Image 1: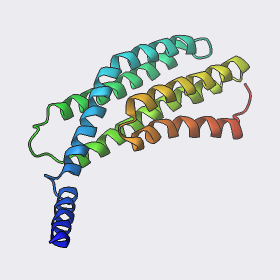
Image 2: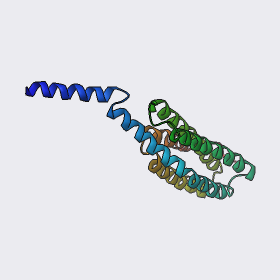
Image 3: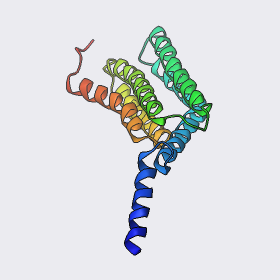
Image 4: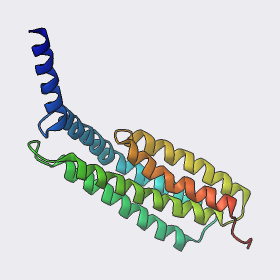
Length: 178
């Protein structure tokens, strides 16, 4: 009798973990919901952060370059906001969170690439203070991305990897001095 009970509990747990109606599936949806809520609520703060960083970047870059970057960043953040809002508007009933997870990771990667573009542009200024600015900007943006994207660890990597790679490449293979 004890073995039958244990076997029944094992089957029930296996079904819960492998079906769309199981607890694991519900957990993934709720994790996605937490991520989307954090992203949706965090976008206004990220826009302010991008504005402040862009303002400081004008010390080393032309205003036109910074404005182009700011438009790209605003577009990436807008896409992030729209995707999060769309996820939150999904019917609670029966939708698969996995495609959404991939979208979130892709959008975070895009946002990381846009941040990386600014880092590379500023590092081309060949100024020690510009390099210090890049270091602190990367740390600040990485901290914000980590905190707001921690519900989906892959999205943290997707947002931080482009910045890290850009800084490492420019540091290891510096462009010709002006």
